[in-house]
Amino acid sequence: MVAMLLNLNLSLIDLDNAWSILLFGTLILLAVAVHVFVNFWRLRKIPGPLIAAFSRAWLLNTVNSGDAAQRYAATSQRYGRLVRTGPNHLLTSDPDVVKRILSVHSGYRRGPWYDFLRLDPRNSYLVTEQDHNAHQAKRHQMAAGYAGTDIVDFEPIINACIQDWITHIHVFGISTENSTVKVDLASSIQYLTTDIISYLCFGEPFGFVKQYSDVHGFLQMVESRLPIMEWLSVLTELNKLLSLLANIPLLGQRLLPQSTDKSGVGAIVGISKRVVEEHVSSRRKTKCDMLDSFLKHGVSPKEAQSEITIALVAGSDTTATALRATVLHIITNNHVYCKLRNEIMNADAVGKLSRPAKNDEAKQLPYLQACIKEALRIFPPITWPRERVTPPHGDMLLGYFVPGGTFIGIDAVGTMRNEVFGKDSDVFRPERWLHRNASDLAAMERVHELIFGHGDTRCLGIRIAQMTLNKVLTEVSTLYLEKNR
Image (tube, rainbow, N blue to C red; front, side):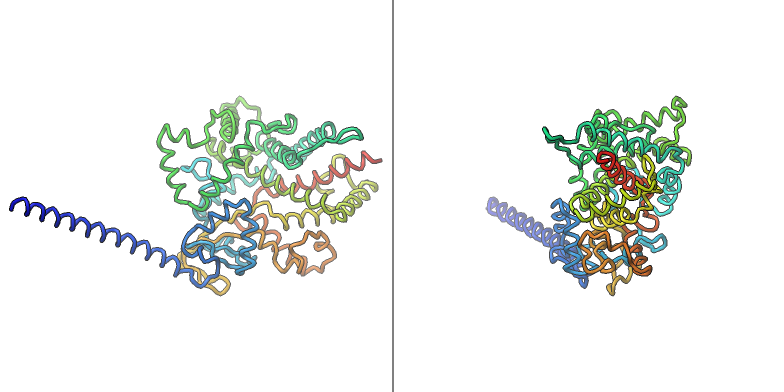
């Protein structure tokens, strides 16, 4: 009898446990269902891929494709200028909306998307700072350095790097009747831009061109980490986890770049640290470079170490992308190539080009400028969405109410396919920038300038990129003329 009662009690306990587990599981499923429904409902009127309304799977698949920029553009073309790409994510290709969300006093702010760009997840930098006032202060401190106004030999530095690059190609990269030389122009261009930026940052180049190699394995490390970084731009919660893990002494040293590393980004951080320490201890002769400008305008030595490293990574890559795109579109279009060569040949013949060509001289070559503008339009150097967050009260965009706290990214390629550029906006045609009436040209310029951002996100390094493009393209062409005189 006692055994029967014990068995009955145990059965009742098991039954109670089963009901408790079932109830707990049901509550969890209900909570998930409510969360999914609420996320779906808040942006339900905005079109986009169906799966995007319920999860970030579409975004993850897109960034993992290796062709995210074109996928964003195709999605905008299919669904319109405001597209839903995730439960709380939108994408816009409308120039007016882009200007609105990037405007200084719009109420929009940088979102957690920017966290993946941090060298150290515990610290904010110019490109990652989400607090508006702090970001403005950093821009003010670093503007002169990025613009080169504090660098006395700004243009001569770029001249020297370009001359080293041309010399290397002339010696090692020209085929003859008896042998064919293969040149990896994409890598070669990145070696050049990295030397230019490192020279401007530290007062001397890293020597990528002279060694004709990836010094410190820097470029390989950045490229290998890019897929992971792009996942972190979608799964932004992981950045918070990284920040917590980075505070664990031994684990943090393994996760983050260290100044003692022999290769990769850590090696560049080490160089930055050494140069900053030399400056602070007065062991470094004063140089008019970007680092000195940062320190002179109030950037702390510790901040300068990271900021100068980020400037090197971001500046060399975007400038290389712009230069590669321009060269590619020129040399694969015989009509454009011949027309540009003739323009430079005629300018050279009447003494309008110096040796080396000055930036101001290159700016007076209308077809060259048209080629550069058109290449940047067709292949924008920055195609990451750079998400902003709508203000708490929400906003009306293109007839849709967008609730506060929504993430809105920029479709750079789609924006540059706007009808203001004509019906053939997907075609590389430099002539579209010539012989246009003033109002049409002004409308095109207003959209085109968004390539470099807008408002307080306007790229501070525009002058470096534009001067490099102007001088490289002109110098390569004049080298050709000298060889064929």
